[in-house]
Amino acid sequence: MTELKRVGNWYKVSINEVSYNVLIQKEPNSIVCEPSSIIVFDDEFNIIDGTPTFLGGGFSIYQHIEVLMGKVDWKYDMVDED
Image (cartoon, rainbow, N blue to C red):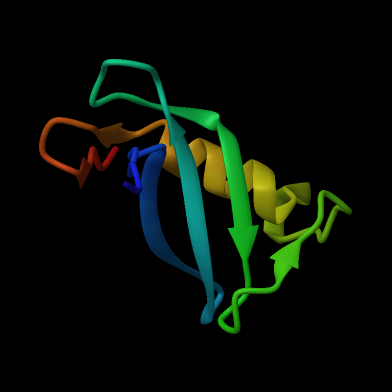
């Protein structure tokens, strides 16, 4: 028998009109995900490595997504806007 275990949440994030697929690892026995535990994929699900691709303000794609995911209300899957 196959056992399935949920390891995190998938999100589609658009930055400067470019879409990224983001997997964020879930903390054990919790609905909370760890924003720094991200894997970023392009639209064709190729992994984007940690090589900095700088956006406005000197942020890499990973840094930008980590900041965004840090604003998520994990109970309702909503972004807390500033």
